[in-house]
Image (cartoon, rainbow over all chains, first blue to last red; front, side):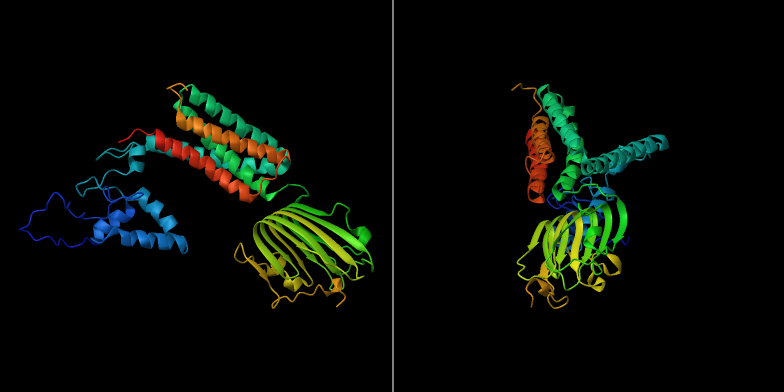
Length: 341
Length: 60
């Protein structure tokens, strides 16, 4: 890195109120809001750190670059010791390094191993709790969280500071379990890609189509439903996407719930969390299909033609989350069978 | 309350217990826990613990 020229005239003495400008980029000790990264940049370039803070916030909001860069600089850029010289990095000290003395390889390896093991255990706990909840073991996971809470309370009353550490595994368990519970993800019906093309009402399963994780493709274009009949079609997806293709001659009524993701029924598209969409109002004698969709996380769509599929198959493209729109222009609403128009 | 009581652990324990009961009630189908309830509950739990830890820290 190019060092900035020393702009201080040789005949002037630095004052106590104006500490020497660091000769290299260091995290600031005095000018810190979080880790002193922006303060350090401000001192190095001799400008107001607020400029870097504003830029950091802007880069965090637009694209999130600062969210990655800031922690990296926080960890790997040493802090100013107050005299313009770097302090040993916390990581260095953690590994057993002291000023002028590198850490021993054995100690460094042991600490890195313990940290990796702890991260792996946390990840396993996180995934395991989510999986167990989706598989029907949510009561057990919730019970363990409650038990850890009681242990923390008991430890706190006994004056044991270590009881604080029980909060961490409890949160690691509660977070995925809560997400799975809120989304309503249930692992039932197998995994993978399923393609169904029933030819009659009798071929439709009474309890509907289910998949735990993956994609469902239910093509009803060749299914004879019969005029004046109402056919109920339950669809359950734990995590993934389900697409139902219906001919234009069928009147579609729908009740679709999605814990997190998108619901698109004949161009009426709703996305976000806790999506609950209903399409009703049939008045014609056309064969009616009552779709009852329950998706944990993912997408559900009812379309007339496979080329309209956006969340399943070769045309999938999820688009931005949390949007609500009616694609009347791109995919004209052709649920005319319901009104006989 | 005993002067030895560790306040952050106590607050964290109470918050985690409450969160666990919330999950338990959802799993027992007493209530439905949507995302609208989950995020505030999780943030309140973590926030309560962090505030208690911050207040319990001796002044510099």
